[in-house]
Each structure stands twice: as C-alpha cells, then as structure tokens.
Image (cartoon, rainbow, N blue to C red; front, side, top):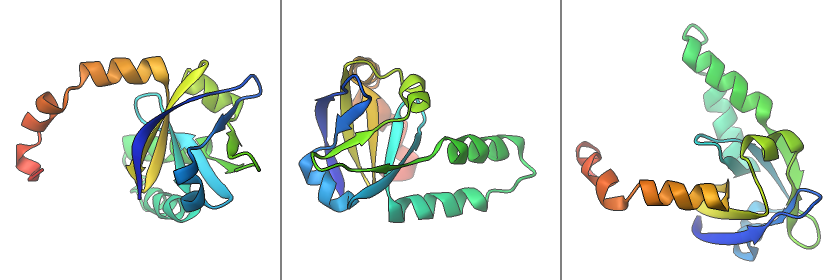
Length: 141
C-alpha cells in the first residue's frame, strides 16, 4: 500500500526520484498516465492492468466514457526506475501536469499521484477534510 506525501525535485532532464519506500512496491517498472485535476498517476504494473481492463470494458456508446478511456489509455507511458530510484517523465505528461521544479508525490493506496507542488498546496488549501467529509455522509466514510 502506498501512503504519505513527499516533496521532491524534478531535474532538467525531466527525472524525478520516487520515495524509497515506494520503489520496492513498484518493482523496476511502472506506468504513468494523466490523472484527474492535472496531476499524473503512477501505477504498479498490476494496478495498471486492472485500470486498463476497466477502461476496456467501459461502454463505448457513451461519449464521456469513450473519451475518458481514450485519453487515459493514450496518455499512458511505461517508465523504468533507474539505479538511483528516478523515473523519466515524458514531455507531454510534464506539460499536462505543469510540473515545475518541485513536485509532490502522494501515496494513494494502490497508486501514486505526482503533482506540481504549488498546485498541490493550492488544492489542499481549497479542499479541507472537514468540508469534503460533510459531502460524503451517504458513502459511510
């Protein structure tokens, strides 16, 4: 399980270090893709297979579902974790997430999100746990 929030820097070659405690769970390879809210999602291979399978089974008759599946699958890229624990983020994904110098790396159970750190801080400030919890009463959370 991936949990926690970490701050790292992205270098001029678009490489970012993955927190050490996440690396062993990822193995040597992973898949990175566009996420919601202009972040990136890093999946262990097994989690990506499950995600891709869900997307393959989305009814293609619904425009929003078809578009979501198309964008998500087309944005995916295989990444390898190098000897120093870094991954290379493709240009189109770096641009999509507006990644600058500092990134926030978030553990979200079966996947990892990568955010531009300033964007993540604004997002957290705007979305307090208390405000969100009030809207989730019907989900038994």
